[in-house]
Length: 114
Image (cartoon, rainbow, N blue to C red):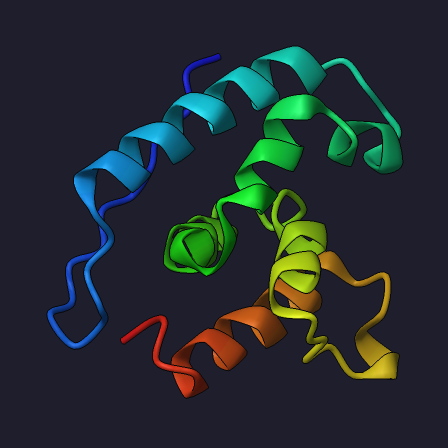
């Protein structure tokens, strides 16, 4: 499986460097390929490529948020670890699509998305 990243079209959002985009895409592709047969999200998020993405810090938040609408489960844990925030209300816990939307709304409010 090849990982495809959506480009961020808005000029209102701080641009992500091409280097960061390439590194993120490479790691995300490696990660999705390695974990596609895993059923445990805990095990998936412990993967070295996922952990390396987290170590990239706030620079990858726009990329994660942009991808969240297509892959809602993938970046929820990483976003919490990087931001040390949780915009998901208790009534949305366990409802992946609603949780993803909460993060997307947070991203707009914080200026990561247009």
